[in-house]
Length: 118
Ligand SMILES: [Zn+2]
Ligand SMILES: [Zn+2]
Image (cartoon, rainbow, N blue to C red; front, side):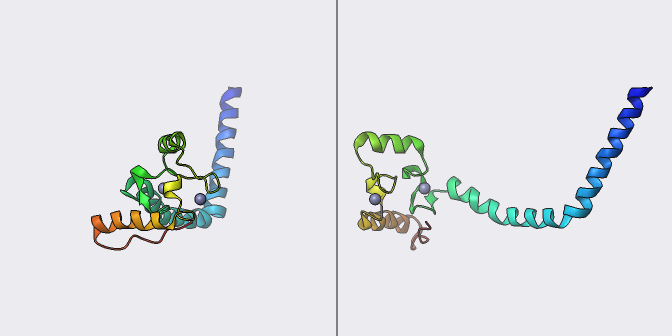
């Protein structure tokens, strides 16, 4: 008998907490959900697509997104310690490499790649 009463009490407490959430935080939650649904597809396309928007390099060649490539580039000595990426993909140290990758994008899509966001 005792334990049933306790269960009922904890259920009541749970409802109280839920009601508090629904009332107090409902709006904030809704806003957060809207913000998320806005950012989620972008986050997906960032690494699911062919092009790495963030780094201006095809995703499968992006040493900043692939730990495997990072290791390979480091093993080859193709690494920029200062900017923590493959030297052949460091647009700060090798601006012409950005043109090289941009040309790949143009060849595929027939337009300029999106600006690299850092
Ligand atoms: Zn990347
Ligand atoms: Zn660099």
